[in-house]
Every structure is written in structure tokens, then in C-alpha cells.
Length: 120
Image (tube, rainbow, N blue to C red; front, side):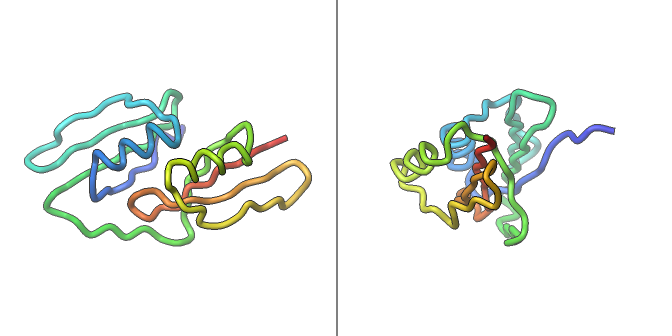
């Protein structure tokens, strides 16, 4: 069995696509209308994707505080500078739980925690 994607409901597809493309660096794999008032986009280059679903008839987004998506970066310091330049607030961190790992969190436009991790 292989893991295919994580699905995220979004309040604004354009804002969410901009975040995941510009900040995370994911590319759109597929984007399509899935019925009246509904749009779905899959982002990512590898096997595992991020699926964004916008439904104008279902605006209730409930993102848990204990869930996050993690993305590896070359430099935590460079990524902190980049997200701050883009006007994105650091949610928490940076943390260094061991000599080989550093990370910090921001929140996406829908309140989901996004972790940027540097592995040395």
C-alpha cells in the first residue's frame, strides 16, 4: 500500500494555491471543477500529493492544532527570512531537538500548521 495524498478543505482556492506554490514550492499536478461550486487541485511532483478542495457550499474548515504537514528545506534560517518577507508570521520555533534537526512552523491560509525542517 502506498500513501497517495493529504486532503485539505480550503476557504479560498486561489489564496491556498498561491501559498502552496509560492511558499512551499509545490506545482499543480491537476486542477479541475468537481461539480457546481466545487474545485479540486492536486499539488506535488512525487508520489505523494497535497489535495486542496474548495466547496462554496461548505465553508466550515476545522483544522486540528495537532496536525501539521512537514516540508524539508536546505536552511531553516533562509526559510524564516523568506516567509517573513512574504508577510507570514512564524507560528512557533525554531526548535532544535537534536544536533541534526531544526524546524519551525507557520500556518497556511486555512490555519493548518506547516513545518519547515532542516536535516543536517
